[in-house]
Image (cartoon, rainbow, N blue to C red; front, side, top):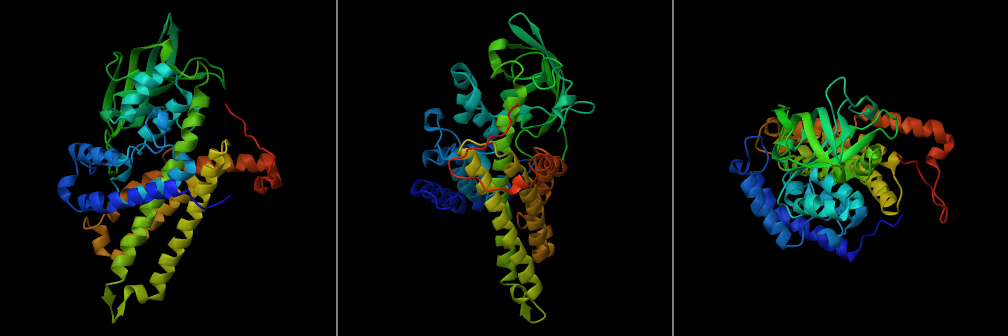
Length: 409
């Protein structure tokens, strides 16, 4: 692949970098910028979103006809990494999970009517959205075959009963995507539905306390007790829920990695700055070989992560599913983020463990990276399945003019 980027993507990247440096980093240093869950205050977020939108730094992931900038997956990799130099960045640019993945999947699979009533308000920043899939035991988590929530056809509607939990952003969301079982068929037994928070027949049981910091709207447990959803609100069609999930989660997992690379680089930045001025026993920390080894290892690992992400983004842009590439990137970058935050704290000592920097914020946030959108072990299982099927061809080079395909749900 060609690693050069277009002048248009570079202009977006540079604009984001300037916005982060001048508008967002100063906010991070002010305790008054945070809400009670250690994220940017909602009123302040609205102000920053208005500024970002006015500068054309908004919804890079969507096509211009749907209100975005049409950056493509490779362009997103460049820009998402830059925007998450700040812990506030993704939310400000309307590129944070779960809205990010939700907008992309509805753009890809939604009907014109669904795009008008469901997608457009999220794109415009008027509402937030959530993706309700994960269930408490004995329901489905990484294995959708265990899903217990059911949607039963009743005339022109579906009636939903069941329970979901750890649904990111549910407490602040108006629009929801719900995955429910509509039959016992192993491959065509799930369907995806769109609904609004004011529809009766469901409730938020609790906002689940987590290690934190938390996304806006938290991570909630939801109960469905007769929620009625019109058949016209099915995304794609009945029985194609796993196809919808595959379409959404493939790129959503990758955008997590794009953002996490930005946070990993920020950890190196903070560590380098402190090591460059802190002295002990007559020598700067930066001049110690042990410190140089720590930073050099992170530099190489971050670049490996960028290459994995770029390869997956390139494969998606050319129409592939990138299942192997996304799984490899997800495992590597999730673990990298945790190591980067840990190293940054170690280099800063007690300062790193305090709230004088964002390192401890990133450290707590980083632990969830190895769980969200598929735990490390699940992605390694995916890779092993590909290895068993492809054997030595697992590592083959694609030949120009010979298109490879992967199975779809």
